[in-house]
Image 1: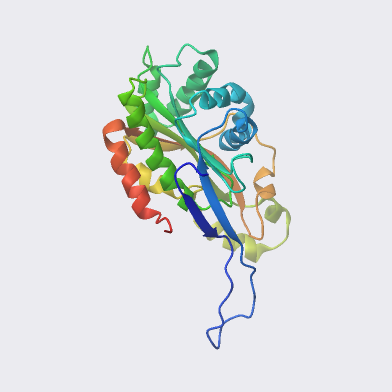
Image 2: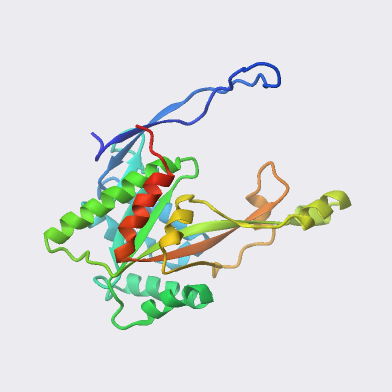
Length: 288
């Protein structure tokens, strides 16, 4: 059985012929039933670690993500995984929270905090985060770690956050160390960048079109746009690991521009977190 509820999601739709002007393409229908589970130590190590590697991207090797995964699995009553074919399968998505103060003496947490402090110092918009991470001892910041496969719908997210709030309340009633001062959510954005392939190609018209287009930062996770409205601070930062020339081109598919990913941090005071989660649920309507 699922943890709390199930969500049936149609991954692909079938084009409807409404008359003239409609195309005749047919699309197969695929109904997918998502289920929420508690993290399972004997099953979920590989799936959660893989998603953490996706979250930290090219900097994943700088952190002990095996230890982070084990810590997540050591608190199985807090957080969720999302799966399709029952609890024995790998997670398609997950969400959990780690108390940076409670685990401040663990070497892999110290490395993670040092990494995040350095990144916060690189962006003036994250000055408040840098100040918090520089305190000794570090405050009771709840580090929210969440990631999902790219084709997992955003509708899976509000239940995970809602359940997290419930589980934190239950944990506090049991005197567990989950009284946070702030929540720090790590995520990713991307920027469309001019393709190196186009620069090598002799197509001046296309190059002119690309150059005149305003490049904007976009979100992998649409809920981040809502969460940052409630934030004390938020902003992006570049990875430490150099990327090979042309890496952005390897990420482009059927489009003119390449894609450059960037890490993103959102810091929310604990008193505003519940309101932020409620707005996320309203923004991303979950089918009933």
